[in-house]
Image (cartoon, rainbow, N blue to C red; front, side):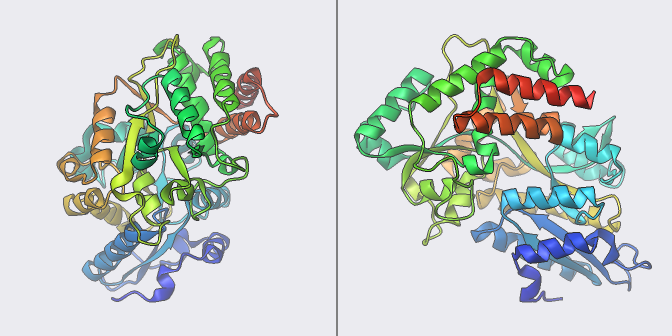
Length: 434
């Protein structure tokens, strides 16, 4: 059936209402089965492709699935990323999550599984799990699979090629020394070097994550992520590296309150609208920028990308990358047809189009060749060739530890925290978890 405009609304008020009414399974009715017969089933779907072609494409997929499954209605909420995370957290706490949601894996998934909030899809999605392959490992708990990853990427610097040329930067920085040189050239040319959404927290935290990845050996990383052992002084040195970067004053005016995405004044919007030269962000950035410019082209041909530089003297592998991915999961109380829908989203045609629209880096091997943007293809190459990809620390550690860590990192950006303070905050939060 044709969906109404009301079902396409991005209104945050609708999302709040869905949380309050425990929408994950109540909309299906007590007698609903799997949507394949005469019963009427409503699935609620939250995602963060809230602008441009990505939002339109997901609406098209919802319509297509409805037409192929009479009796099924999909109510879509396309939310700004940080709004979605906040509302998901509230929904999980009240056991009222949407039927289909974006699961980031790591410690977050483990806590959801332990609380009985996420559906085990090991058998019901076996064919799709087999097609995706090893990418599902990050969404596996005790050998059971709980989500289907649809995009896995890495974080790096997106930049404006024209601005780099204007400032006389002819080579992408490969070391922090070279990055600092590029920052000074940009400032001399009257260009604000970097935007950061410190007001949203997590974009600022990515800097400390990367400095940790560059300063710390693989053994130190494993000790931290597996035993919450931060005794290696590389973690303090990561904070020292962050403080050194901040001292260069590379960020946009008012960065402390700048939001990550969603408006032309956000960090992504500043880059998209040629107000700054670069931003540290993930594989989602081209798609986000397209939705924040009037012509829906983002930076267009001026879009460039380079990996986070080497930290001279660091013990980490300079080729290692920071990243993670997003996966489709079904809440535990969702109707059985929910699993059919997330498998539908991972089908070959859908992943191919996902790649062609530059919405992310697909996990289905047959779809990776269709990544259209050369910058995303470059990023995909770095992802595939990295000796290891470190999962975002806040995701790896889980909500409580990750939240305390991010708050401490933001305090350093706001000149209220210290390198040791970040380590102390993580250690204290971890002690409460054990």
